[in-house]
Amino acid sequence: MKILNFGSVNLDYIYRVEHFVQPGETLAAKEQKMAPGGKGLNQSVALAKAGAEVFHAGCIGIGGESLKILLEEYGVHTEYLYKVDELQGNAVIQVDHSGENCILLYGGSNRMITKEQIDETLEHFSTEDWLVLQNEVSNLEYMIEKAAEKGMKVVLNPSPFEAFLEKLDYNQVSWLLINEVEAQQLTGETEAEAVWNTLHEKYPGLSLIMTMGAAGAYCFTPQEMIYQDVFPVKTVDTTAAGDTFTGYFLQGMTSGLSLKECMERAAKASAICVSREGTAIAIPMRAEVEELYHCLKN
Image (cartoon, rainbow, N blue to C red; front, side, top):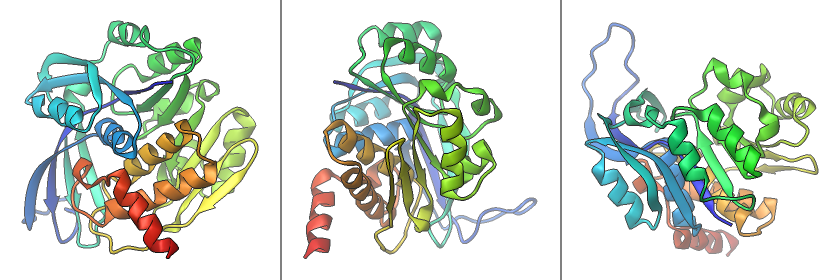
């Protein structure tokens, strides 16, 4: 069994600010950093740090060569990353005094993934394998369709949310991972159980993870429901928290842990992540998550 993440890789330009910039306002940033990011890259790094064998597919653009090197340093397989003649995808991230963030995303090279590349890559994967997707790349619907035809388990994090996502066939998706904003955009509901009931009625085979920031996270499957509270820490930066949760949850799922164990490990990893600055670099190693587990247990 292999995990293929067909996802974005970004250069993140991170600005620490007192508050988010308002219309017509010019605001001086307290600090600026450039770091690796992108939901795809973050989730591959989280999977790898959690102990999974993961293959990252996508496109590296002009200026993004260091991103491929970073993935390889964490043990992520990169033979399905194509080099393209397009500016590297990037994001401008504001982080305020409370650790909350807002993000402006430029797709660039991440929008250069072709159907031909998708077909060539999927030839190396089979029914036993998992495909992890986010909405920061081109031809997302085609990826889902072709992976479903092969019988792969498709995991979708529909972020950033766009209107076309409402028209996807979620019968082809095994796991949907969304936050409370995306849940409302997709279903019109705000309560976790109402979100689940709406989706389950339309797509009875779908399972759902709904993260709700400081309010915790829910896991719904056709068989059970699990709620996971957060582990309280001082929040510094929430940018990669959701991607960390995703990576650790999926690594647990693919290694045979129970849903309860998967949710708990993912929440612990996210707690460590938000206590640090940055994106991919803030994602904890597996040993750090296990150490937190022992500390909390004792």
